[in-house]
Structure formats: C-alpha cells, structure tokens
Image (cartoon, rainbow over all chains, first blue to last red; front, side, top):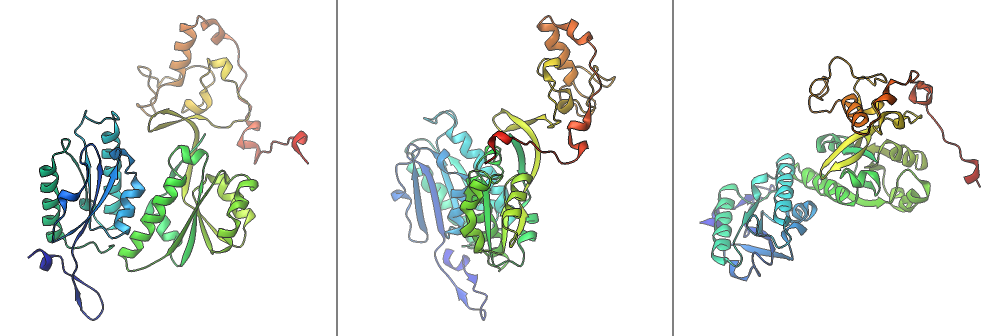
Length: 145
Length: 222
C-alpha cells in the first residue's frame, strides 16, 4: 500500500508517523485550467495557477518544499506553443537550476519535475500525478517537509 | 556594472555555522543585475540555507532584506534595525558594499556571500564579460573603443602578441584577441594610420599599483 510505503521515522523513540504525500503543482492555465481533476484520496494536491509557467521563479519552487511539498510538478505548454513565446523554455531552465540546488541540499532534484502537456489534456496531467505518487512511494516523504 | 558570483552554498553554510539567527542582506544595484545578490538571490539563499540545515537536523532563523546599494550609507542605514537584531550578516554585495556595511556596523560579523569578479557588461542574456580594470586613465579612444588593458591577457599597448591565432587569444581560445578587434575596427573605419602613432607605455600609478585610490569631489562636500 502506498501509505505504508511513505511512512517515515519521527526520530523520537522510534515512533512511526504517516501522512499523505503532498504534491505541489505549478501550472500555466493554458496548459491546465485547474487541478480539480488531479485530486486523489491517497495524496494531497496543492495547485498553483499561473498565467504563464515562467512565473514559477526559482524561489517559488524551493518555497514549495519548505511549505511541505514532497514533490513539485510543473506543468507547461509544449515547446513552441507558449503564448508568451519563451515562457516554457525559461521554466525549464529554472527547474533545471532548482533541481541542482535540491540535490546539493539533500532533498533530491528528482522530487521536482517539469512536464509539457497539450492544452487541456487532463488525462496526461493525471498520469503525471499518478506516476509522481508512485515514485514517492519508492522515495518516501521529504525529510524537509 | 560590477559583476559578481554568489559563493557556493557549502561555503556560506560553513560561515554561518554556529549562528542561530542571521540576516542576509542583498544589494539592489550591480549584483542584482548579474543575479548574484538581489532580492531574488537573497530569497533563494535564505530558502536553501534553511532547507539544507533542516535536512541536517539543525535550524537557523534567516532574516532577509535588500537595500538599493550597500556601498552608500544613505541606503544601508535602512538595514540598521534588522542588523541590530543579529550577530552575523551575510552580505550579497560586492567587496565595496561588504566593507561599507562592516564599517558602519562593527558590532556584527560581516560574512561575504559573493565573490566580486570584474567590471563588465551584459553581453547577451546570461553572459557577462569583463570590459574594464579601473586603471584610472581611460585611453580606449586610441584603440577604437576596445580596451587592451582589460581585454588583452597581456595588457599590450602595441599590437597583438605572437599568440594571436585566427582572431582568438592564446590564453583562452574562447576569448577574442583584443588586438585583432582593434585592428579590424581600425581597418573597417579607415583609421589604420592611427595605430602607427606612438602611444607611451602605460603609467600604472593611476591604477591599484599606487595603493587604494580616492576620488575627492569638494563641490559635493557639505
């Protein structure tokens, strides 16, 4: 079971504490209108809606981890489909930089990922979340959350 | 602008080790422009420090503030209240800003978070290049607006060295040979004859070789 997989030690007397994994989803509203269709009972979704994915600056991505995210997913439009021309390219570079910082910190860059999705493809977005939840089952919850 | 690079996180972490509360003080002018020490970089460093220490089971309280310029008293006094509340300040200013804050607030430990690198320009998005050494006697008019002091690895005043190859410098093949650029510019503008004029050797007394320099403007003194 997923919940068993995401258990972690509290560090106090060997008590085991469990909670649902938290995923923060930064999404441009062209790629995905909202995160309502991504909700699930085994995990928590925090949606951050933006007019363009390039607004997800490095600090916002890191802050999501400080605020308790176990994984952060950034959903952007396909290459050459950004209404602001280069927004998704800028996002990719920012995500790449923050992944390195997460590796350096010890949280792990693998917990932050960007995906290109076709406008309104909720099924693709849902598959991405399911994949992320499955990966969190292997990795466990973030120690920084 | 003055171009700098933020120090590696590990180095800054080692500097703040032992402090329970610090202030990260950014500078909103040169180092902001080169993405080393502006408001965004202050926020990123604060987050990275907090998260990194949390991963090690430690905690630190990190305050954040960015002033317009750390090299001017008028601006750094805005940080006085926050500085009074901590024992250490990580300054993300250039070396001038760090020293200004250190002298203004001697009661705190001033920890530099940026390596000041050079005086340069934004050549294109994401690329900063050195253009000036601050030698104290600008003569770029003699060289078509190209400074052989800062842009030639050997600081030659009298034409390219034997190491110039296909327009590139022998010290770094990614760097244009400044003298190739000077000659090309002179040829393109019909001023090759100007390069035949005698230019006396560089007088380095106006540069750092004469020790710390001052610019005194009595007309601005009150």
